[in-house]
Image (cartoon, rainbow, N blue to C red):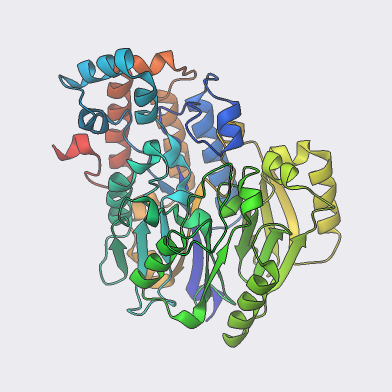
Length: 451
């Protein structure tokens, strides 16, 4: 199918007004190292928007995902706090501050965790399928999926083109972290592709190894369930296990050590368990669809896993340019790491599929453990499916400027743990989000709007 009739849409999450460094994510080295450092929500949102605009200016289709309402008063009420919203926040701050911090998490900005998406070319019913991730490994993320589901359903509302599934059962056996552990290989975005699911452990097959230090967040059983829900054929799906040793070094999601796009897999040598079999199966199944896998493997003697985690080299966006070669979008931390930057210069000189590298300042996100790949959800769409989306979420120069004004009007430029106990923060967040839903034409998607 011609590139003119299909595209890959990048949906970036807007950073929320309560962006803070709570150190909530055990296994995420950056999140733990920056625990309780004061954050700058306004700068964080502006950094994310700057990346979106830069990609839009380069001709890539770009949309915006609205953030969550925070603090999550409903979650606090479910934990036994009563009274008015202000009283609930005050009591939580006094009696259970860690719980209040968790309810204020702005981690929904990492949209790669929002859902798993299968394009219509892959699914049995010919619709684009979305399954919201349950994120049940961490309390602060497990409370996201109800609102995430409503927002995605508002963005992709036409049932002729889009199918939405609720989150998998909220038990450890079905831990699902969304597209951070999923990618897709294809000759063209509009053609049938091979969907690649990476898991950290199996809940039921105890013969498979598991990491010993940090938790494996994605299970094989969750990945298999999503594939079934989306109606994917066995001959176009590959399941692979993360190398437990790298999980224990801080690779909490596959997108910290591998990224794929089109027919290219860019990964570290130690990313997968039984890497030779995994790459061979991907290559074989893509070949049956008329494609040819191009592997860009970074040897461990060139870059260690520690460098990959610190720089987030692989937590990058790999995007197809108009000339067929690829752009790699990396965080500025890659330029700051001499070994990583030297490797990237060698990569560019190799005449391989990756022809360009662009570095972006995403420090506010990086300090909390999320790079360029974390900030976006990829959705391959046919032209008619793109046209069926809610148009207000598509980034344009006008929307970009309007969102900058919105951020400057509603976001604080400093937020500490002490500030989370301020009941006024909830009012500020709700006022901002109520205006945002009008800007993006989403309708009522937040709990406070549904009362």
